[in-house]
Image 1 (cartoon, rainbow, N blue to C red):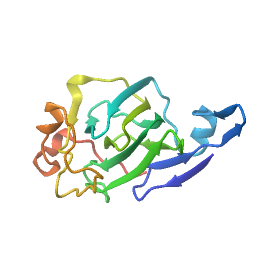
Image 2 (image 1 turned 90 degrees about the vertical axis):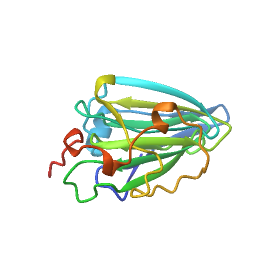
Image 3 (image 1 turned 60 degrees about the vertical axis):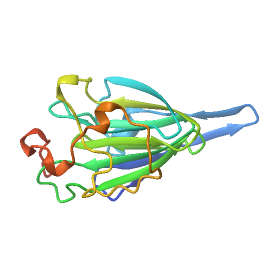
Length: 186
């Protein structure tokens, strides 16, 4: 596997080794010891599966407390996946990184706790799976407006399909910073 550091410290793209022959292919999608050695130390405790249609945009989501590291993969289709640093005091606060994930490229995107996550579907349909380092706590979930001008994400879509909750999310500058995660220098 190959690990590529994004523009945000701690956010990685993982390109796994694909063993392919006339029968099909095999990919090891997670190996605790290898991923820990590569800088992904979290134990994952929950797996999620999301099916979405072209134009669906989900996010930007995070939990605080109970921040979740996420290891994201696409089984079918293609998505534009985004991480936004929302850790108060971080040198990269409000900055974003992205990766195109697809069933063809088999890449994974690792997002540590303290980052908001979102994605939009750029194929007809997409089947996305992700591992989480903490359980879902709906009482601590929060959203940031997907098209926050100050963050400036260059989404590959202009008129996304949004949930009512995502459509009503606030820009990062309007969220009480006492509710956001804190940056801890390592």
